[in-house]
Structures are given as structure tokens and as C-alpha cells.
Image (cartoon, rainbow, N blue to C red):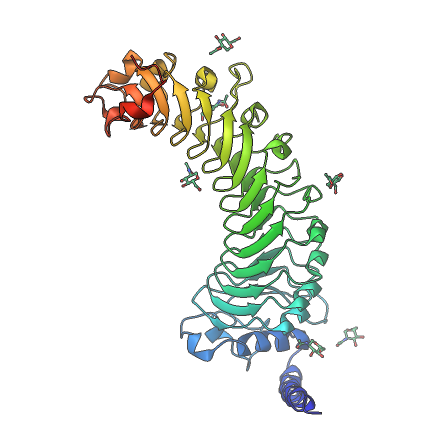
Length: 412
Ligand SMILES: *[C@@H]1O[C@H](CO)[C@@H](O)[C@H](O)[C@H]1NC(C)=O
Ligand SMILES: *[C@@H]1O[C@H](CO)[C@@H](O)[C@H](O)[C@H]1NC(C)=O
Ligand SMILES: *[C@@H]1O[C@H](CO)[C@@H](O)[C@H](O)[C@H]1NC(C)=O
Ligand SMILES: *[C@@H]1O[C@H](CO)[C@@H](O)[C@H](O)[C@H]1NC(C)=O
Ligand SMILES: *[C@@H]1O[C@H](CO)[C@@H](O)[C@H](O)[C@H]1NC(C)=O
Ligand SMILES: *[C@@H]1O[C@H](CO)[C@@H](O)[C@H](O)[C@H]1NC(C)=O
């Protein structure tokens, strides 16, 4: 019985608003659909008025005029579909300015059923993403990054079959990625970065148009998932992922691959290094033990950046690294690499390589002569190895390991 009171109050409020709107509606033709106007009103009402600054978009939402009929400086951040016949106008975009609005996202948002763009980036929305968002079947772009949204991805969210762009990064969302996420069949961009999401990542092969996937800075665990072949950019850094890189094998369009700061192990395999389009590969801070490099000069992979520091890489430096014609930046620091620096690296240091970090390994022997030339403009470090590293060579600054740590490294 007690529950009836607030329900009734809200109903009364709605009724009053409806009456006001009906009065407004009687004045002109082809106005905004009443439900849309009510939903806009609810959106504004759920925001703390103290956070609505004089120059902000929301401050221009003046309900004494019709939202879609308004001109110039009224209802900033709204776009409408204006029909040619005498039917009602519909709100198609709500694109708020990021001025730090504080409050909640009202469930009434679900009544803007013609909405194709909803942007709430860079505000202070808190509380859950309302489940009614699943009613926005025309939505193509949903961005609510850098807010304080909490809770899980709402049920029914995967009904948004036309959604192409989804960015909920930088919130406090949690829970797993629902396995029926592949229902978002039009998705080309998805960022869940920087939240509290956890669990295993489901098979995402069904998102067959996905180009960018950012799951970084969460607590996802388990193996790397199966991913769609359309993928170009994958950011998986700073999670708790384990297992091998093998699921990435067939991703022939991949350009940017960052799986750094996880618990991946095994080989940084030839399969992955030979992905033709990869430009940037960051596998730093994992538990990889081998770096497999084969000769690629004929296939011409585009790799420019190879970041593999902070792993458990053993064995010798791969000579064939020199066959990556576009490679300019290499970081293999903080591993357990042994043996000499290949002579072939000398020419590269003089010509194309710009960054070379090989410090904190167990490399031994003399440097290729080119390393000592003052003409090299390579940045980097060879410190903390077992090398014969002349102190007048810039890369040698920081010194070498004490001989007690270099037993068996054949430094002569
Ligand atoms: C729209 O126009 C048609 C034809 O002119 C008319 O029959 C109908 O009643 C109008 N509808 C509204 C909502 O005014
Ligand atoms: C959505 O519109 C319907 C019909 O006008 C209304 O009954 C309902 O209260 C609205 N929903 C919300 C959450 O305001
Ligand atoms: C992943 O999903 C795709 C398509 O939805 C399916 O063909 C494939 O068998 C699945 N892979 C695994 C390992 O379950
Ligand atoms: C590679 O990843 C590590 C750890 O996430 C990060 O510190 C580093 O800046 C990244 N390197 C590049 C070149 O982006
Ligand atoms: C190397 O980079 C150049 C210029 O960025 C580009 O034209 C060329 O195609 C790249 N080479 C390969 C093998 O991708
Ligand atoms: C790589 O292959 C090319 C062509 O077969 C050959 O000319 C080159 O010497 C090889 N490079 C290395 C480092 O093995």
C-alpha cells in the first residue's frame, strides 16, 4: 500500500506536464511528438540544476517552446526529424555538451524511439544505464564515456541491432560481457575501456563488422577470445588474460595490437609477427618466453613498433628482426636474453632504427662497431647486461651487471 504513494505522485506530475503540453500543442501543427517532449523534460529533470551552467546546452532547453520547432539558441544538442506530412516531429539526436552535468539518466530515454545518436560524454552521470535503452531500436551511436555510470550492461541491450558505435569507457561499470553481445551485428567500434568489467571474454566472431575493440583497463581473465577477422585495432592491455596468442592467428586486417600488462605466456609467435598489416605490436609485461622471428623481407610486413619488455624471453636476439623494413622502434628490455648483439643490427642502428631498448638482459660480447659511431641517432639503452660496453657510447650509460651476475655469459 505504501508503494502507491510515490507512484501516484509521479503520475500526477506526468498528468500536469501532459496538460501543459496539450495546451502548447493546440497552438501549432506538426509539433514534436508529445512523448518525445516529455522524455526530454525527464532528461533535464534528472539533472541537478546546480550543474546546469548558464551557457550549457541544457540551460537552453526551454519547454515554453516546442523542442523541434525551436530555433537558434533554444534546445541546443537536439536534432529532429521533421516530417513532410502533418505527423509529429521526432527527436533523432541528443548530443549533450560535456560540462559536468550531475545526475541520472532517466528511464524515459527509452521513449525517444526514433533516437539514432545519444551522446553524454564527459559529464557526471551516475547510477545504472536504464534498461529502457533497449527500446532505442534506431540507435546507431551511443557514447557515454567519462561519467560515473555503475552496474552491468543492461539486459536486452543486444537488441540494438543498428548500433555501430559504442563507447562506455571511463565509467564504473561491472559484470561480464554478455555472450549474446554478438547480437549487436552492426557494431564497428566498441570501447568498454577503463571500467570494472570482469569475467571471460565471450566468442566475438559474430561481430563481423567490428573494426576497433577496446577492452583495456578492466579485469577480464581467461584466454584471448575468438575475434572477427574484420578487426583492425585491438586494445586489451591491463587485464588478467592468460594463455597464448594463437587465437589472433587469422586476424589479417589487424594494424594495432596491444595486449600488454596481462599474464599471457608461450611464444610471441611468427604467426602474429607475420600478420601483414600489423604496424604496432605491444606485448610488454606478460610471461612470454620466446620471440619467434622469421625472415619477412619478401612478404614485407609493416611492423614499425615492437614492444616486448618485461617478459621472460630467453635465447638470443633474433637476427631476422632486420628484415622488417619499416621497423623503427624496438623494446626488449627486462628479459633474460643472452648472447651477442647481432652484427646485422649495426647497419640498422645507423640507418632506420630510432629506438632500441635492450637493457636489463644478459647480453654479452662486443658491440657491433656502428653502435660506437657518434652519427647514430638511436635512443635507448644497453645498460645492465653483460656487454663490453664503452662508457663513451651513449647507449651504454648506466653500466653493466656485476660479473657475478654474468657467470656463464662468456663475456670476453
Ligand atoms: C493529417 O492530414 C490528413 C489529410 O489532410 C487528415 O486526414 C488528418 O486528420 C491529419 N492529421 C492530423 C493529426 O492532423
Ligand atoms: C513513456 O511513454 C508512455 C506513454 O506516453 C508513458 O506512459 C511512460 O510513462 C513513459 N515512460 C517513462 C519512463 O516516462
Ligand atoms: C565462435 O562463433 C562463431 C560464429 O558465431 C562460430 O562459427 C564459431 O564456431 C565459434 N567458435 C568457437 C570456438 O566457439
Ligand atoms: C606498451 O605497453 C606498456 C604497458 O601497458 C606501456 O607502458 C607502453 O607505453 C606501451 N608502449 C608503446 C610504444 O605504446
Ligand atoms: C613502409 O612505410 C612506407 C611509408 O610509411 C610505406 O609506403 C610502405 O608501404 C611500408 N612498407 C611496407 C612493407 O609496409
Ligand atoms: C631474408 O630473405 C632474403 C630473400 O630470400 C635474403 O636475401 C636475405 O638475406 C634474408 N635475410 C636474412 C637476415 O636472413
